[in-house]
Length: 268
Image (cartoon, rainbow, N blue to C red; front, side, top):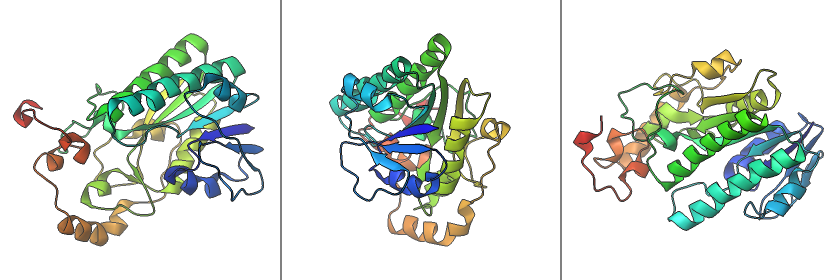
């Protein structure tokens, strides 16, 4: 199996690479930034998401795509548009044209960021994006649905919480996912025989979770890490940098507070 990973030079890609090595016959790493520390079974191919021809060359002969590339945080509209909407469309269209029929899309919890923290939500709730970034990822999920239904691609959307070796604060105790649990979800997306179009949450075994992740469990996901082991450090970090009045109400955290000038009492 030949698998392409976009955004491979980024933080998440760097954490995932050691966990995915040897799992596939070939792992093609792609980014605009060169990757020098290639291991056996890895190959680097530069590509810009906004260049459809480059994406076609990248995906030629590929069986699966792990799409981590794009604008990874909130930003002004134009960079979000170029990377996460135009670039994502190019990725799906290139995959279709080149016969790459498995797409694992790194979407985000920010597509549902304006749900309150007291509410547990699953993968079926209406979207409530908290940012341009969240809007672009909601577009990505909708685009994946189109390419699954119309063109037969197998699309697996992971609404990632926060990836790292440990949760960074109290909020992330609810949304954290370890690199090895994320790698497990990616494996399901690339290998599960029954995938058509699925949305799951990228979270470890977190007892404070805001998300009902039974759809991932239905597909065989069994997280091995839990955030509660890091409670003391997370609480200390939050005491040192307390949240503002908007941030601490909503699941999307600080993304909700950016440029906020609405009425929080109207947000149920």
